[in-house]
Image (cartoon, rainbow, N blue to C red; front, side, top):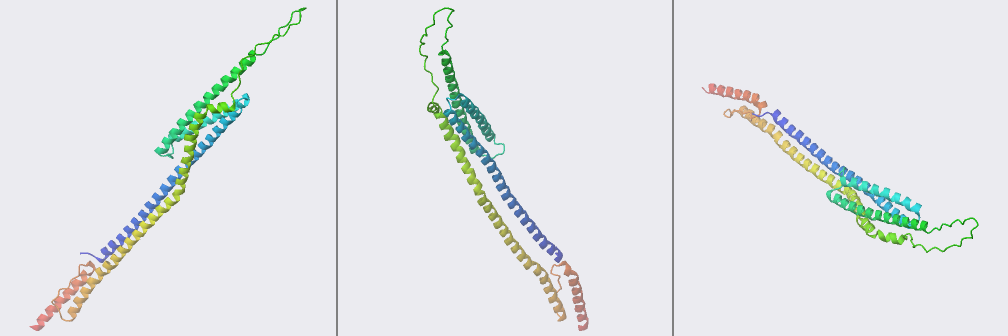
Amino acid sequence: MKSIRSRLIAGLGLIIVFFLAQAALIWWGEDTARRDVVDATRKNTIASSQLGDLAVLAQQIRRYEKEYFVYVGNPERREAYTKEWSGTADKIGKQLETMRSNPDKAFNETDVSKIGNWASASEFYASEMRKIFGTVTTQANKIASVATAATPTAPVPAAGAAKAVPVALAPAEAVAMFSPVEVNGMITAGKDRFSGVLIKGVAEMSSEKTKQTLALAERASDGFKQLLIAVLSTVLVGVVIALVLMWTLPKAVTGPLEQLTASVDNISKGNLETRVDSGGIAEFQGLAKALERMRLGQQALVARMRR
């Protein structure tokens, strides 16, 4: 036998469970959307920063390369730009190694594969440039050697000897330093691969990461739209539950009350044949039993009076 109290507790418990489920759904949806956007923003920010640093280093090394070629005939300037170029090349190598190891998971597998291609292009460019350094150094040594050999040493005449007549030296072998155009031609293969693979690839990936970052706003908007739809759906379910409870709970009370009222009305009208029932409600059981005793008492009294 059910009681009104148990039915109310069940109904209210259902409402509480629903609101808890709704709150959990909202929290899960908001947390998921937030984590996705935050994680994507973090990765794109790290990737864009590293790509930007690499792009700057790539432009610097190409500038040092051009300056080296311009001043290839100037030993001091040539040496200075060799050091600048070598230092920047080391930085590019370290930057590419960091990006390939991908400790922050800022790049996907496709990105890491592209970065590997950039590293190969950079290594090829560096090897070609170092060959030029070696070639230019060798040529400079030859020029210095020839210049030393071509310098005449005048003999010192003996005392009382006649004045020495200068003897014309055979012309030394002509050795000249490479021109900027010549050394620039030596690096054609290396710089073409460096520019076409690394510099172009960095620009393309930077553009893609920028697009992804800008798309995060739309992604967040879509996530919150889905969350709003989910909330509205749960609200609709809540309204349905409330309507069902509004229909069933009052009916669970009014039905047995109407039945007891009918029983009392029958007894008052002398209809003592219908048994009084509580309608399955525990709270009405005592009242139903009292009415049933009254019905039986009235029924017995009427029977004695008829005898």
